[in-house]
Structures are given as C-alpha cells and as structure tokens.
Length: 435
Image (tube, rainbow, N blue to C red; front, side, top):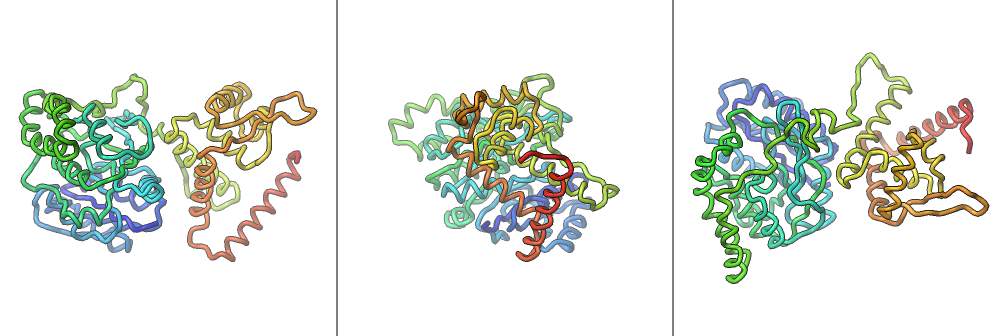
C-alpha cells in the first residue's frame, strides 16, 4: 500500500487527542505517517503529541504559533511525504479499516479522490450518513449535480471523509484559505475537484464525527447566521459550477446553485428512535473486548480470531447494505466451493434455521447465490454466484491473515499453519464433525 499522510490539526484537544491518535495508529494499513500539528495549544496537547512521536516512528509532532485550523492543515500539507493525504479532526476518530478502504478504492479505480460515508455521533446516538446512494465511479459533473441536491451536507463540504492525491494538491498549489473562517474546507474541496477526472464513491463509513457543543454546525441551525456566513462562500461555489459546465449548463443550474444560501445540512443529526439511529457501539456488532486475564491460551486466540473476522464481515455488510448473516453465508459458501443445503449452511455458520432460510432467500433474489440441486437429493443446494463479492471475500481473508501473521517470517507462518491444521484435526476427532 502506498504511503498515506494523515494530518490532524490540534488546538487544546488534550481531553480527546488520545482517542483520536489511537484510532489512527490502530489502522490496519501498513504504510502511514501521522502528522500532529499543535496550533499553539495552551493545554497538554503539545506534550501528548510529543510523547506519541517519541514512542512511534510513524508519528511526527509539529508545534507552531496559533494561526487557526486552516493554517495548521496547511502546515501539515507542507510536511506531508505520502502519496495520499487524509485529514482527521482531533475531536473525532477512525474506524479500524478507514485508511485501508480509502486507499484500496483509490488504487483499484484510479480515482483522483475517494469520498466515503461516515458515522454521525451525537451524545450516545449514532447514524450512518452518505449523500450519494450508490458506490462506484463518477466524474466531476455528476458529482456537482449530486452536490446540488444537498449542497450544505457535511458529506460534500468536509475534508475528513475523503482521500486526496498529494501530487494534485502540490501541482495546483491547493491550500486552505486562511482568510476564511467558515466553510474553508468546502472551498478547498471545490478547488481540488476542478482538477479531478474520476471520483470514487465508497459506501462504507470511514469516520466518526462527533458533534461539538457550540460548533459551527449548531450555529448553522439559525437561518440568518447561516445565510450571512454562506454569502462569503457563494462566490467560490458559483465559480465552481461555472468552471465545470458550459454556459448553457451553468444557466440551467443557476437558480439551484443560489439555493445553497438557504440550504441546511441533511446529515448533521443523529436523532434517537429515528430509523437508522443506534446507540454508539452497536455499529460494530463484532467489537472486540479483551482482558489480560484471558491470557494467551488457544481459546483466547480463537475468541479474538472470531471477533476479528466478524468485524471484517460487518464492514462488508455495511458497505453492501446487507445483513451480517448474509455475509456469513457468502463466506461459508466461498470457502466450501461446493453446493450446500440450508441445513448445512445453518449448522456451520451457527445461524438459526429460520434466519438462515430468510437470508438464503434474500441472497438468491439478489443473484448472489444460485440454486444447484445435487443428483439424487431432494433438498435444494446453493452455490456462490460469480460476482464481485468473491473478490471481496478473498481480500477480507487476506486482510485477516495479514493481521494474524504480522511481523512473522514466512517460515514462522508455515509453522503456524501446520499447528492450526493439527488443532483443527484434533477438535474434529473429539467432537465428531462429519466430513
């Protein structure tokens, strides 16, 4: 994986900095540098950042005089050495697979920018947000038209749910406008988009955005203040559309373009009891809990192993708008490589017969599995269909093994595989698993 520079501007963020940094350092991405830019903090932020830098070669701590968040981000861009740039705010944190998913999408598609969904956190409530419904590749005209439908959405305006190419940023000297105190990230995005040909839409949450009391998001709930602040941005917004479309296309969109002044974010809230809103923590149904008291026994390793693969499955489920049980079934059929009945599927995956039957029906309707009745068998059997999901499952297993075998030589990996095979054989003998 190509190197990613992750830039975090820090101002008096001592209370939340560790959560943010830990989530970045725990990314299952092999090649990152974390640039912490301490923007003249008066609390312990600078000391915390330096301590991380002293203990991890991937971290760089930079201290500068207070100049605002745009100044701090610009300093981070100047210091970055990665092929790609990712921004994180100190109040927030990343899901474990964020950077990996963004980079993989960028490299697999040859895109100039990747934009992902995010988790909106308000107190103990969380909702997945994403203003473009379908993943895939779009061009800047399609992106511009999509943005017109919800121009004030965080999804489009912020930096932190996107991955950028550093060569484009450097080639066109794209920087944060330090003279602007509102929507400076939107202006950065508009300028960057002018130099893109392909934008990848990633339907997976890549960020936890927490609502900060007294933030500009709250201020925007007041119509007068929103319009007043947006007047300072409308010139950039208007010029973007003028540059993207020809004169006729621009004139057709002009009334909608100026609707930006009265628009509100549709993805700024996470309201209890509304469909799609959950308690924080429920979004990772396979969240890993571990205590040192569990020790390093085979059972402890198995527990952690199962939780890790379940977390990866959960990510696939969210990305493709599926239930976790459906991903389990797809993975089982992929590993088996032969037709299996619903009873076999349920037995091996631990899914109940009713839930398994329903999941199989949904997968069949979606064309992700196919009927394949064995000769002489009355019961229907199913196999995995030839879809993109086969590549996803193979990549998931590869990611899983990368974590398990991290830091090991090939000879050590082979010994581990032999031990694991012996353990599996022993268990099969004792619990009477049928071949």
